[in-house]
Amino acid sequence: MAKGKKASEPKGRKVTLKMAKAALRLTVDGKRRLDLSNMAIASFPKCILQLGDLEELDLSRNLLRSLPDSIGRLTSLRALDLHSNRLESVPRAVGRLRALVTLDLSNNRLTSDPAALPPETGLLSALRCLNLGLNRLDAAPDFLPALRELRELGLYGNRLTSDPAAQLLRRLPKLQRVNMADNPLPPPSPSPPPSPDPVSELYLARRDDLCHACQRRCQRERQRLESRACGQHTPTHHKRALLFTGLITPNSAAQQEQEGLISTPSSVHPLTPGWDTCL
Image (cartoon, rainbow, N blue to C red; front, side, top):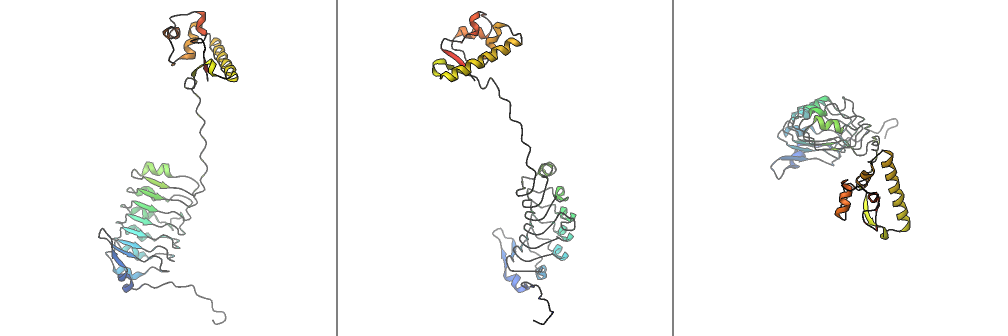
């Protein structure tokens, strides 16, 4: 190499029209698909513009840094796969690809700047699946609410500090899935624990089945509940109903006590000898 001459960057593999026609295939549902993935292509092969009836184009895993405006001539495209390239921007002409159903721009170098992701992308009225994961987005693109047919959206692996999913779900009625993984989102605020329901935690047990420590704890809890009921000026014959509301009583006499039909001093005693309550 001559002194002072800089080494030029690799130009990548050149794709000819003959190569493109040889790579053209028909999918099982009869669509014309061109797969030029993983071929070290550094510049968009303009020869494929002569294949104007292409419906699926795969240029993923190449070295593309930009796309020409002429890509807007591929108006029959339904699927465009550009993932794992070096794209820093998308041309405004992409808005002319109105038949697009799937657009994969993941694993590139795109930012939230409108110059990188132009608002014309919102003109893709048939788009159902958009993958913008593994880029450099710090905010969701403004054109997203215009994609009324969108079902799936990938925003994972970016630099988003706020979650737009709730807002997007309201504005995009057909949106079914949003992938927001691996973003520096703030942790969700913890919700307060639900307050315990004393009735739902009330059990009826035989005193003989409880250990000495449990008997003492149940007795203390019983005294606490009775003291609280007395502090609220609750009549004595209603104490039983407060303590055992909703329980199935072991006999009719105890049930009558709960209903206030019998008001005797024994109403504050256990329902049946040998039974006690435990929380």
